[in-house]
Every structure is written in structure tokens, then in C-alpha cells.
Length: 271
Image (cartoon, rainbow, N blue to C red; front, side, top):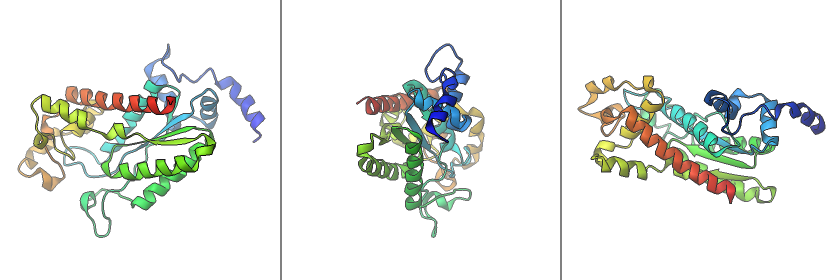
């Protein structure tokens, strides 16, 4: 299709997309940033209107103890990406990348030891991110932003971001790894100030991610299922004291994460 015809088609769409906070409702604004919910015409119109930043969220399908579903990371990072996009403005959100490194596959290590976990190698993951970024560059996005809810995704995302930004330096397209999203030091400090310890906070299927998921999708968390596993949480893939999680705590912790990531992204795209 010729570009001139495309722009003619788009003209009528430019006023429709509520990419900034305004009189439209929260549901309409949220729908406007999700690429999976838009047509190609609406996405092209958004880019023409200045929405040239796109967030690529990565989650993970893995065991999360007996009390949270395999898609915990996907649920959390999807909500985070949407909120960051709305806070920054003129930003769209790509569909969540669910398949990420989860440990050794053959032989199985780490999360791959638990049934249901689906992992890919770092090579496959990085190649996937490169092709996603190339697709988004071709569409017209100028800032492509990776945020990951999983620890093993962070190094690969950083490598791809650095590699592509260097390769595309003359095109004006930059790829970013939003490391502040995954940095939980401020959250841990806040919990310690409330009387928690590193042992009670834990690291996986733990207090922080249990609380965050409760605040986002409370029906997804079944704390009662922890009762039978209190003697040895490690054997069922959990840690810390996730039973101490609450919706209120989760909302506070999630807000800290969103605000930190939003500040970092605003600094990256405005420099």
C-alpha cells in the first residue's frame, strides 16, 4: 500500500486515540495503549500522532509455589507496562513475551525442575527480542523499551538493547533496558523498615511478588494453599513468608516499582 494512501486513511483516526490523560475514562485510555487491542490503522495513527515509544514487557511461565499461577510474571508485567505507558504518555505496549530463560532444560535446573515451567535458551530469547525490536523499528517506533519481571531475563535484555542501539545509531532508533523496573532494593528497604527481614521477604514466590499479584489480581493468589507447605517452602518452590502478603502491601510495593520505572523511562526518552 502506498504511504500517501495510508496517511489519507489515518487522518480520520488521529483524534480518536486517547493517548493522554483527559476526559475519556480509564478503560478507554488503557485500551488505547495496548497494541494487541488495536488495528494496524490505529497503531499507525498513534505513531503519526507522536506515540513513538513502545514498551516490550517480558514475563515468564514458571512455578510460583503452591499459591500462585504459572503466569504470575505475565500478569504483573502486563499491568506494570500499561501503567507506565499511561504515566509517560504517547507510549504503546506490545504483547507480553511469555517465554524466557528459566534455567537449564536438559538436564533441568532451577525452575525447570517443576512441571509446567516453559523455558527457552538465552540465544533463543535474545534472537526473539531482536526480531521484535526490528518489527517495531520498521513500524516507526523510535524508543523500544524492554521491561522484564524475571531475573534471568535481565542480562539478555540489556545485551540486546546495547547491541541494537549501537547498530541503529544513525537511524535515531534507540532500544532501552528499563533496569529500574526490576530493581527491588527500595521495596526491600521499605519492608525492612516495617519489621521484615531478608529471610521473611524471600526471593521467589515470596512476600513481594505475592503481595503485588494480590493487588493486581487478588483472585489469582490462594494463601490458604501455603498452610500445608509451611515446614519446607523451598520444596514447593516458594521462599520467605508469602503468607504475610496483603493487597495493601502489594499496592504500595507495586506503586514504588511503577514510579521508579516511569522516572527512568522519562529520563531516557527526554534526553
